[in-house]
Image 1: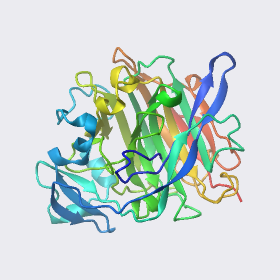
Image 2: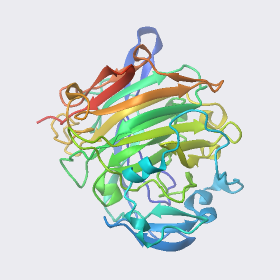
Image 3: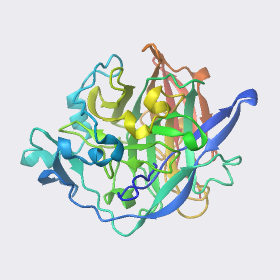
Image 4: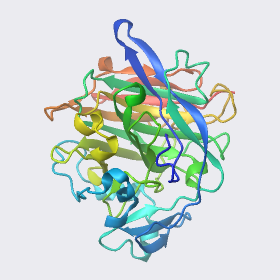
Length: 397
């Protein structure tokens, strides 16, 4: 996962493994990240807090006045009109609140939940420890110069910033981290536009990173950067991303899948609102919040759309071996060849064009990257006429 943002806000951390196709020769370059250490700050109760609740796992949830949430502290959000509901959700999963409740730890609601007009914000317990900040750079040889990051990722490139939505259903796991206090493992969707210092991203998925979240297990996260990771933010740890749900929030704990058993799937749609330009996040068809166009400072994600979509997993290895000698797991911690119920997968791969038509991404449209295939790899499988992207692995000794 990525991190940064508002220098006055506590954020940071990391993520991303994207890659870029160099046209004439189809040369695939990894866009992994440089790790930087940033001092984290102690989390404080957000202003506008009406009520504070505690989940069974120790997470603290602050119920914050919707109109006083951190997003509106952003200097580009001063005149923002809060959009309570999206204009239209034409594609994607149908709303399934029962499925959502089964995925999230809802124990914090035992004491009544958040009052109407407020949103639940997970309080981050960041101390003086350091977390990883990512700055993307094009790396000619990702195997030898990846700054500790390894990926197993696929991407769809459109060539023009016209894509208006991306969709995926991703299995949730609780991968083992070799170094619990410094490594991380994640799975996500990237929606990106531009390149170089103009790279902009919209990101969402799940992450296991106790150093950032201060509690173990997979957590829902969102991330964004308007300027190739020079700034940006995770979750609601600084201003920018707008939360509208009274029930679900980035930073909340998720129920992982069982190896060889029940699979916990997170259906995600990220769709640009045709009227407002806000990029809405839907979980199992339920809108929970959005990335407003103003935070992209007039860039492509504010004015046009996305030119590249990516799906997959990433780990960060803090040992200094660049991910070649670590037992930090990606996905389920098992190789893709083990298949359904045993390996992590992404399915339901769709994108929406400028005419608001939705298409399934086909295997021949997708390019993949796994710089350390003996540690983490990927594989396509066709199941019941649907394309599955299996990925991950146990790491390497």
